[in-house]
Length: 493
Image 1: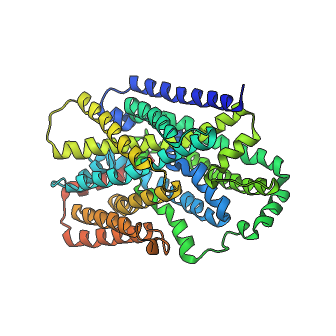
Image 2: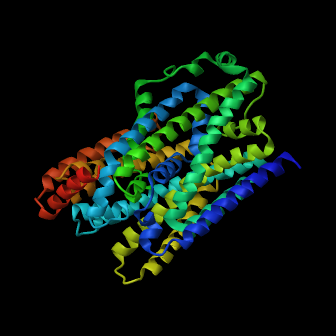
């Protein structure tokens, strides 16, 4: 049996498992809350692993190792920023958001939470939130599809477009039918595969490169600056990298897990599991890139696409079937993020745009059907954007990440900690944050100076704060819910 056949069998087993989980979740999904939020029943381990898998996407196994392979440890500042941001997200956002979304109208999406929290009767805030989610998630989903196409091209020599279609078909199937539960359960499996693969490849790779000292010596022979955290870096460059951490506060596909966790008491356990998984996974991604630099130098070989260093090392180090499981880790990273983003985009389209704009008496069953149609529609648009295979994965992800971080991050934090934030303040802050990222992120001279999330986040915060001060009027209902949230937090901790 050929190496490719062993690997293909492993991939087929993995994809079949994802489809089975989708079917299992489909049997447990009976209404819109189940489909969009899993009935608020996730345990801490499922919450942590699904949030981590949904967060990291193909950039963890392809984008980040590729950047370090080319530029060295200076690229790890992104990982530092993300780890800090994720920890603060679990600490500052998770407990309050879990309670507040239930206290304020039992909200099941971020836009509906903002509308209920700020008592926005105009529905403009909810509609604007839904549009922002739709725009940036379509780009985000397309980045995952690009990663899927690249995966099959580099692993099996299949046509990029065929790989894109295969990955899209499986992930659309289990997301479309199984909804949030399918996304969460598959994310747990995918997160474990990613975690183990990222640890095993650099550990066994060191045997090929002669151990730690030989590996380091080989890297220095290529370029001693590759092992420096600051060589070639500027203050604004490091700030831009660390600023990735700001994005966590506004990522709908991540913070929606906090809304779905079983109780506030589970948040602390979820944080420990999630941050532990994240730290070791990021460490493995960095180590994989460094081992790759040493291996290719020692063997006088070149790597055509730096973003495939994880894939190629797995094929070199392990038996073809084990390598196939390693390859499934890339699919896991890609598919977990695509599915999470699709379900949030679907909820934005149906719960926050369709229901807000079109008054209808449709049943829960009909809304679930509409949600599935929305998953399919967004997937088709994302595939069209991914078809040319023209941008790097990290570039597309960074743009979408900044869009969410700048549009929602300051508003989520202010809504949880400041009584006086208003609907008008949130609306104008969101719009200015999104527009700043859209403009800044498409002007090379600006993006080369500083990452667009920094000006976007600051402008959103400032506009939200001052417009809120100018438009604030006391509201007994808002004050009552704010106080009730704080009291419930104290009781449930």
